[in-house]
Image 1 (cartoon, rainbow, N blue to C red):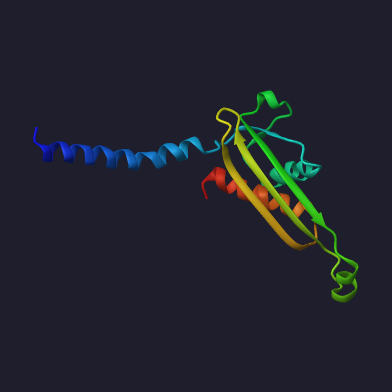
Image 2: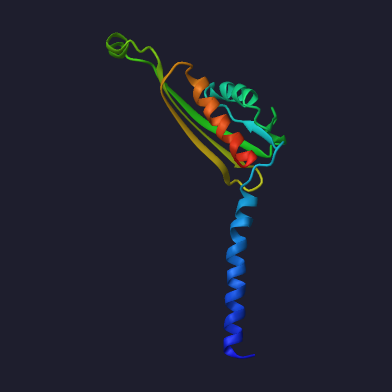
Length: 144
């Protein structure tokens, strides 16, 4: 074999490997439809998230036993109630809401999905941010 031929073959194999790496990474980071998930306690936000996942028809199976789960959902939520000045001056009684969730694989320990929601003047409080998280989680699973 000539040096040009060897160089050509090496270049071809490297190109093929670089083309396949994103496919392998995507498969490892995907959440399959019907996967079993466990919701870690999140200071009460897990209740809103569970209801939002049902309302948005997220195609995951929520399990009560962490040992049965393929994925773990963790997160945090904060509510900032409207200040007196905001209520008096702007007649706005709605709270500001922040929430974030992470979905990690039990098998690999890696984070396969993360989302953060911020809602100013949220009329429905934590329900709004939970529904935003559930909607984006569903989109990720279904590939939208």
